[in-house]
Length: 366
Image (cartoon, rainbow, N blue to C red; front, side, top):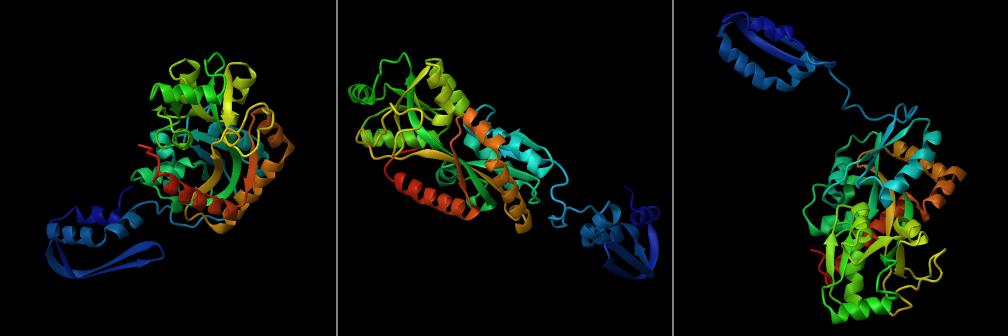
């Protein structure tokens, strides 16, 4: 868009002015010029340097990016839901099940955006940088998002997000192919002790949730294994199914269907009680290893999202979570639903940070 003030100045080399008064009023620049001779080029340099911000407002369309988001009639358009992992993984599946049910309660579609890479860091960066107006929310995976901030210099920080609610708590399991020579956890541990580093365990990324679970178990069992990182649970499971690794630590929702189909077998669960539907699978605690491990998947918004909008997001998502449609979809996808309020979620994140700092002193996640 042209700016008539500067268009006029550019037509001449010398102008007569005696004073220059620049004022900013009601979103517009007012420039008062009084007569005095002045070299045009020098004048323009000074004027541009002094009034760059004002001239952008005066010569542009003004925009409304700085206006605070309004809770009135929210939402008025679709809501973007960022998932920091590939389509088909546990976080993605849960996000899609909830988003499908939530559309009815918001009255607008919720659109999943998979932004994977760097163990989830790329998606979390995008979420942290999003405009805090309620139209961008995202799923975080715990403990992964916490471990990323502890093991590397991430662009995002944990306080870059506002908690909305927790959706799923997915228990960890140690899994092998059904045809594996390891028929029990004892078989697995005995082989690993006799053959250090020969067992390869795939995970969803260096320092990510499944890597943490596998490394903690290896430490408690006093075995040496080879951890093989992938970009997410989809590729991690593909490696196991293709025979490229001997085992993986996964979440129950990610493998339940494959176990029931006879393709994979669970050696043990990282739970205090046996899993519903898999009552024949022992817990690690029963086998002498005091480890509890799983992954929480929670909804958050960018820091700065107005509280009124956060309240709407929470209430609508909670309604959707409790709906028959969602609960049936979750059951079909083997998703273990576990609601947490914003306050409970904040405390859970803080507890995970404490746990990871403690475990980081005894295991190497690099």
